[in-house]
Structures are given as C-alpha cells and as structure tokens.
Length: 385
Image 1 (cartoon, rainbow, N blue to C red):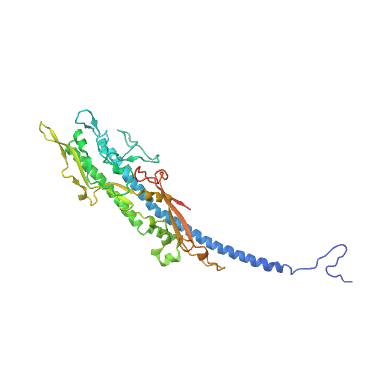
Image 2 (image 1 turned 90 degrees about the horizontal axis):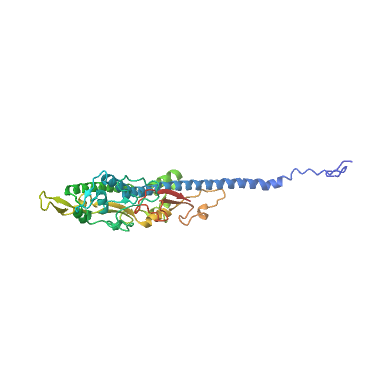
C-alpha cells in the first residue's frame, strides 16, 4: 500500500515538504532590508554634507579670527615691548653718561629722567644698569608708564586721550638737572622719531586689518572654497552672509577706529633745559620751547603715544564670537524636508555653529585684556564647538 506524505512509519515522523514557506518572510525581510539600505544611504548623504559644512565654517572662522589675533599681538608690542627696549638701549647708564644734578648732590641717568616725565613705558621688573630681561616665560608683561606723569594711561582708556601739550622734560627737571639745551634737542628728536615710527607701524597694521575685516573676505573666500554651495557659486559676494552677520558674530563686533579702537596722540611737545650764556654771572638761564613744538605739522593727528581697544570688545573676543552658517539639505528618497524640520532659529534653515575666540593669558583676571595696560603679545586663536 502506498504511504501517504506525513505518515508516521517505524517510529519516525517525516514532515511534509514546505518549500514555499520561505516566500512569506522574504516578502517582509527583503523590502525592509532595502529600506534600511536606502535609509542608511540617505542619512549618510545628509551627515556628509553637514560635516562638510561644519569643516568649512570652522576653517573660515579660524582664518578670519587670525586677523584679530595678529592685530592684538602687534598692538601690544607697539604699546609696550618696543618703546621699552628702544629707550632702554639708547639711554640707560651705562653706556650713557649720567647727568649731574644742579645742586651737586648726585646724578641721574637720562633713561630715568625721561621715564619719570612719562616719555615711555618700562617693565616693572626692569633692573637698573642691565639689559632688558626676557619676558617670554611670563604670562603677564607688566610694562607701564610712570603713573604720576601719565595718569590717563594707568588703566585702559574708554575714549580717545590726546595730550594737548606734553612736557618731554619738565620744568622741575630743567631746573634741577644740568641738562644743556643742545642735548635736550637731541632727546626730543630721537623721541619724536621713535614714536613717529611706532605710529606709522600701528597705523599700517590698523589699515591692513580694517581692509581685511571690511567685508570679512577671508571668511567668505575660505567658506566658498571648502563648501562650494550653489548659493556661493551663483552669488560669490553674498557667500557666507549667514556666518558674517550672525547675532554676536563678526559684523556685530566689528572694530571701528574712534569708537572701540583708539590711537592716542600728543598734539604739542615742550621741554626745558639750560641755555649756557658763556658769561660768568649767571652762566646759564632756563630755556623752554616757545612756542611748543607742533606735532600736527609732522602728522595730522600729532605724535603717536598708544593704541587701545575698549575692554568690552576684548572680553567679547575672549568669550567668543558666534558663527551660525545656514546650508540647504539635499533631497532624499523619502521626501523628508530637512530644510523645514531641521531649520535653526538663527538662519531659518539647517545650520552649523562655530565659537571662535582670541584669548590671552589674562582671560579671566583682566577680562582678556593684554593690549593695555600690561601689554602681553600672547593672544591665540581658539575654536570651540
């Protein structure tokens, strides 16, 4: 008799053939797998674009902030280290010969005399009679004017501080020190040449910085080269506008000469010294510049003295500038509009963010002020997520 399929025989159960049963789960698993592959592909496409945008914004913000760091460091050098070392090497005793006091009670070095009159700043660690010590290992360069002679520069000025008439050699010094008129003229010429040069350097630095930040072209060009979005290709001048005009960003914290960046000048200079008559009684009289030397005849603004930036801007650079750059998400297989559901409030579309800073060692103690007082050229550009 013919055995039926599925019949139990000799104690063994033989299942019936079920070749078609795999078809049912396949109808569920294979489409799900295909959907997963599509989802993975589309997610990767969006993630790749976001990563590209983030890299482009990070690079652009870092390059643009480098202009700020350069200006802050170079201004710190012009304010402190340069004049300190120049006058230290020119007038320190030795090699310079001391000047005798009129009373015959002692002598004074020209370097000390000019510093006491507020002619230049010097380091508080300055050692009399020795070469300037290295300040590289110090986090704070304590270089300052004599507080009595230049009270307007004891702290960071909040406005322009031009000196109407500056006494390079005071009347008291002219009386008490045996300083001859011709020597005093030499001090004036050297002083005016040094600070005229420092003023030219600072003015050139500001001019370059102002041009580089007028439209923030470094940010725009870097973003254009790295992101290469359709918006940038069709409108290069508007490339990176979101990042430039972000609230709390570059354009909102622009440095403006006369508003938050100041260059301070001496408009006139006068000095006192002894004019020897060649006679016996009296052998000399106290001479003075009459009228005072008009420094605006050399340059329209006068003789440069110092450059400063307001404390609120320096603190903002230390806390960081926010850069929010919008970008357009590519279309996807599932027709999900990430440009709507993923938009940022700052740009109205998906965006990437960079927090860019220019920080100095006095970030917390002095509100990120290493420009003046204590000009310390150690600003560094730092990028935060």
